[in-house]
Image (cartoon, rainbow, N blue to C red; front, side, top):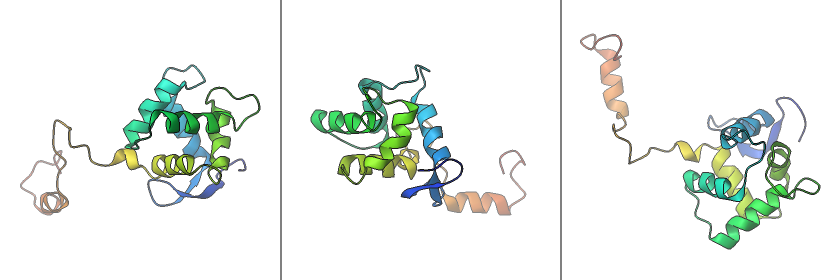
Length: 138
């Protein structure tokens, strides 16, 4: 893993492009919503579940520990651990599954519990073609 816009392993981002360090840093910044510069297991578990992955307690702990331990004396997931953690994906299948899901944007899949339903693509196309809708709706 190098500095700059270097690709990260064989993972792709939400746009289908090779993932970069910046993608990983952005994801860490989102997970670090408390600005504590470390992510504890409880918060990490929440994000893993939000992505839609179901690990049992033991598996979750193993994934967390593998990522945290990717840096010397790592007990928590820090920015450095999150960036280096992608290097252990070949040793831990669940870590690979997690990084692939998060980097590919699996958490952006349509949410069925949303208060307003997603607009179908055909409806969007029809609205864009007609001038009868207000410009703000188009």
